[in-house]
Each structure stands twice: as structure tokens, then as C-alpha cells.
Length: 326
Image (cartoon, rainbow, N blue to C red; front, side, top):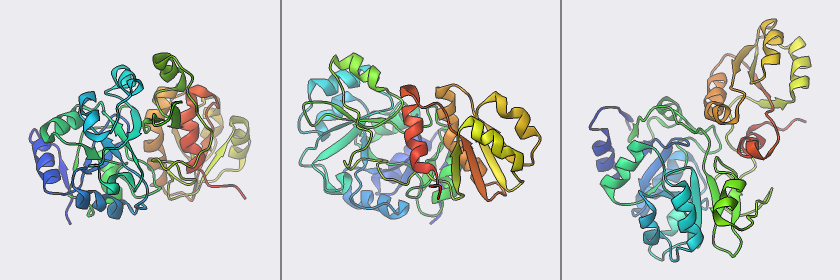
């Protein structure tokens, strides 16, 4: 199969037609690129699992055009969902609700709930409005590999397996959405993301649970995920600085701290510096890992970012991306 890269003014209409025909199209969102199928076509949705190599019991997030579409997919829409949608949609927040009986088990992995999100990318919103349906769309990458934040990264992983990629430029946020479960009396954050626990609690006016670990089937909740092909090792700033003394040209280094510049300048490592503020760091993380993964190196060393609530989503992704040290 040839994979088209859609870049002109007709791109949205071409993508819509392909999706109506049951094909897979990679689509831009503000978080990462998603691999989309019409969520009303179970046979099309099943192609997502085959293209990614993703287990069929892993539920998919359904992307919708606006909050008025919630009742098309959810059996009950609690006030908490409406409050959060009003505050954060379009944006990087996914709401878990009890699904309508008409929602295919292929979409939900056989689970009784469905994840719903209104994305903030103009091309994706235009596509959703033209189709007037929901698009099931996990990240557009092979299962457990680095999530793509550019069309080129999508093509590297899935070219020949999908019909097209709708090129919307680099993703503005760069990390997957916050997932909030609203199916019980107490809201729970099941995946840390760009919308924080504090922000959600300020809107709802009630405490929100955020378990460090859980066994609920949601996107991203597997031990190994977001991984480059090369081994990835994470170190504190001080530990990385000392290790740089013996680093060779087969090592790549992803860092953010200015204090490491001089030490790196005296090595032959392949290096890439990320921003030291959380938003820009998150935006560049996956692309940085992808870039270094393509370099002529045997392993990647990463400087660990701060371990606080602001960086919870970054820490979550890195905890799944790193290779365990023996």
C-alpha cells in the first residue's frame, strides 16, 4: 500500500473521503499525531490494531468535534463532564464515560466505557466537522514506540500500512492528553497529561484521585511504552555529568540543563538540548528521542527532568520509555 502525504488545500476533503471508505488516515492533533478510523465502522477500526500491532483489548479514544456530541457516544453525560469540557475543550483532556450501546466493542476493547476528546488542532476539527462522526485515533506509531509529533515521524513508522497522513505541522503540545475517569462518584486521573490535577480540581470543586499505579485499561497504561529502538538510560544531572567523562561517540545525550554544555563540548557524543521549561520540554521530548534514535549511536542517555507535579506527565512517559538498568 502506498501512503499519501496530504499537504494542499484539498487535504481535509481527501482525508474525509478515505475515512468514509474505511481507510486509515494519520491525523494531526495538538498532542501527538493519531491514527484515525471512523469509529462507526468496526472493520475500519480493527485495521488500527493491525497497523500498529496493538492488542485488541486496548481501548481507543474517540475524537469528537464538540461537547454537544458527547451524548452520541456516552450513555450518561454527568455535570462533571460538561464542566470539564467547557473549561478545557478543545484541548488535551480525555473523559472516560459509560458508553452508548451503539458504540462498538472494537473501539472500547470490550470495556463498558469509552474515552472521548475534542482536539484543538484546526485541521482535525475541520475533518471532524466535515465527517460528522467520531474518529477513533490512538497515536500513529507502532505499538510501544515513540509517539509521533510530525508527519515525517508517522511515515517512518507506518508508511505502507495506512492510506495517508494529513500533514498539520509539528504538534503544539507534544504529549498525550490527560485521561479522567468519570464513571464513578470520585473523578480519577488515569493518565497524567498537560491538564493537571490542580486545574481539574479547580473546575470541579471536589478532590480528584490520581493513583500512581492502576490496572484500568486506558491508552498508555502498559509498563513499556513510548520507547526508542535504542536502549534509553536516564540519569540525574550530577550522575550524567560524571558519566560524560568516559562517554564515547556511540552515545547520544538528551539533556536540558545549561550546566552540562561544557562537559558535553569535551566529548564526541551526539547531543540534543531540550528547553528547561516544562511546556517546551514536553513539546520537544518525543521528537528529540526520535532524532537521536536515528543517529549512529548504540544507546541514548537522558538527563532526568524535575520530579514534581508540574512534570508528572513527562515523568510518566519517561518511566515507561527507559530501559531498566540491570
